[in-house]
Structures are given as structure tokens and as C-alpha cells.
Amino acid sequence: MSLEAGFTIPSAMFYTKDDDGINANDTVEYFAGRKIVVFALPGAFTPTCSARHLPTYIEHHDALKAAGVDAIACLAVNDAHVMHAWAMAEGASDKIDMLADSTTAVSAALGILFDMGGILGKRATRCAFIVEDGVVGHVFMEEVGAFEVSDAGTVLAALTA
Image 1 (cartoon, rainbow, N blue to C red):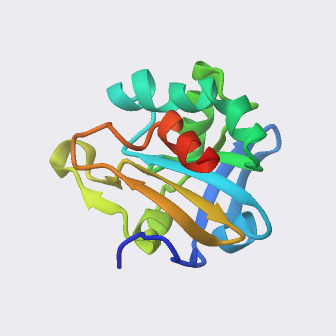
Image 2 (image 1 turned 30 degrees about the vertical axis):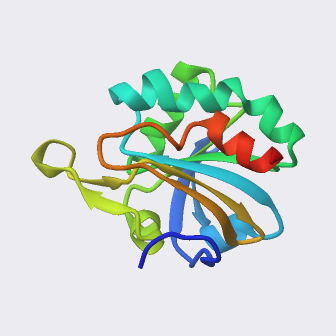
């Protein structure tokens, strides 16, 4: 299975952290009735993810919302504590929903799970996609090691075209 336009988001659990603790969330419920831009990346606090990928979504947050997006979500194979700490460190807490895919269930269900070897292990492929009421509309898939098409500016251009 590979993530593509027309793909219906299957049920899988991800985790978030807030002031009340860790929350388990189902993808079907999260995506129901909303337009959400998701960007997936190999991991919190990693070089390209921290220096380039996440910052584009923070920078374009207001423009994405103005283009009709209900939420912006970052998906990574990390635990909820790490995703929360990364959001706090980068100033993303009030802008980006940080979806912790600690069990790889979501990445596997989406067909974007890949093995980065002994150092990082199994991770989400770097990509972005637009989901409207649980159905994927656009997919911006990166080649391994690249960061060229999954940035917020590219996604915004597709939303406003």
C-alpha cells in the first residue's frame, strides 16, 4: 500500500501530550469532518526536521489556516513526551498538533514506514499530505534523503491553486 490521492485514512492509534498527560487518539476520529495538512518526518530534534521542515509550517501557519485548513499536524515515530518537548522548544505548541507514532501503527497503516537502519530504525518517510474528512487529496512524497516538496510553501501553493 502506498499513500496516494483518494486513500481513506485507516484506524490507527497515535498519542499526544498536554497538561493533563498522555492521550491516545484514533486517526479516524481525528480526521473526521476536518481539513488537515499533515507533514510526516523521520524524527523530532533531527537536523533537517528541526532546521528546515517544522519551521516552514510554523512560518506558514496563518496562511494555511486562511486557506481553509482546520489543523496542521506533524507525524513522527517518537513518543508523546519527545514530540511535546520538541513543540515547546520550537515554539510550535499552539500551532501544530504533534502526533506521536511511537508504535509505528500510523506510519505503517499509511504505507510510509521505512527502515533507516541501526541508528534511527523504523521511521516515517518525509512527506506531506492534505486530508479532508478522512480522505487524502494531495500527497507530497520526498525521495529518501531529500527535502524538496513537503515544505509548507509547496503545500500552500497546492491549496491556493
